[in-house]
Image 1 (cartoon, helix red, strand yellow):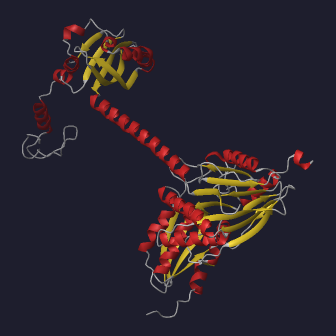
Image 2 (image 1 turned 180 degrees about the vertical axis):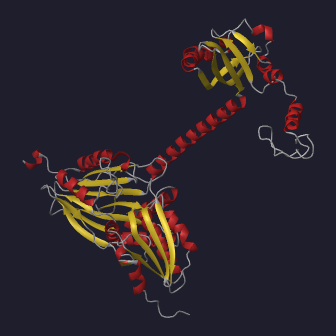
Image 3 (image 1 turned 120 degrees about the vertical axis):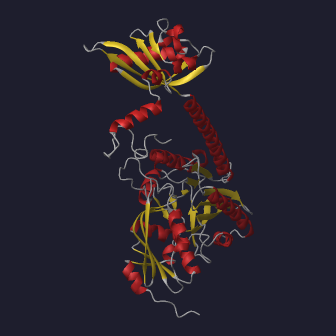
Length: 120
Length: 431
């Protein structure tokens, strides 16, 4: 059976969600259901760390798109870090490599984040 | 109820755990108090215990039986003792079980516990019981008699019957759900593929799970002026929610193609519809290939224009035995982005060429023979079709079907395959 571990931590630039295991139909709702509880402010960045993701199917992609919609609705940014090779092939196939910004590590994502110009 | 001793011992633990000595309170007082309370006599305990007691000789003749059991069955003491055997009290089925299993096991092990049997009462009713027997041996180790306790299992039997009924109900509902799912699945697929003159077509849908409708879909249908539309796609997720999107996608694709058959325009329309319908925390998308088939007079084959929205590339198996992916690079999945990029490619199918579309249930299958559970993958599929080419639509689909069979339960997701092939001219036509 597939299992997914989800860990969340907070950084000055926004929350980091670390996923470990298989992100698929059996587990994707774990990520989707956690979104409303995330402390994500406008101008921050939601980082999803995929280092430990061993498999991702269309339902898994749904979870990442839900995270993106959630971030955009909060006027925040989203970045994926440590996208494994098998996942980046899928991303390329479905054209999501054009949609998500990616970084090698969470630190790199934090460093690269420049908050948008001050919002009202 | 509390003990009736003096106030100092009222809350003390029962005998066996004597209280600490206190002045004026002797341990013997407690024991006497409890005995008086319980009106304890071994005789009464035996006769009116909350279970049946029975002692039999080694041949089964009843030697001693308590009041409780006699009352349950409606016998008097004299009816049974010395006259009947334990086996006589059992139903025919119980007697058979007693003779073939219970008795031999008891002699072998000296003890049998918790066996469910049915006793016959004098009024003809049956009493489900749980029976435990032990063999009592003498000092020399030789067996003397058999001691048996009998527990009333009527409540337990009623509970088991209820469990069984609930289980049967659940089984029936599960069968009904399976039927509904299969029916729903069938409504999402064309009952048969239309006949396209000059083209050999075949399709197959593999259902991975009978209790979750998958989201794969395909169709092949006529458009105006001798052209044909075809599509194959995969809605994210599974279950009823995915089936609703599948249905919407399928009808939107057919309607959009009538309105404007340009494949990129068809997918763009589908994107608009899905994007309006689903967004926020429950995004729904699909990956899809839409194709427009036009008979190619000059070449004698078909011109195929394919647009891809983030779908695994079609495979082109040529008449010369070569095979390759037909990528639509940069195409993005349909339904979540306001203005996705849709990639288009055009190819000519000549006699003997086969075009194969598939969903990723195939390439994401776990390989049964591979203990580390690696997924089948795009490269393996490409090798597989290279070995197939040249082929026909029906042979290609049959081969994929056989391949899916080898994965067994390793297929997590539904798989759809659709193949079209321009048949080679028959030898008569060539002459």
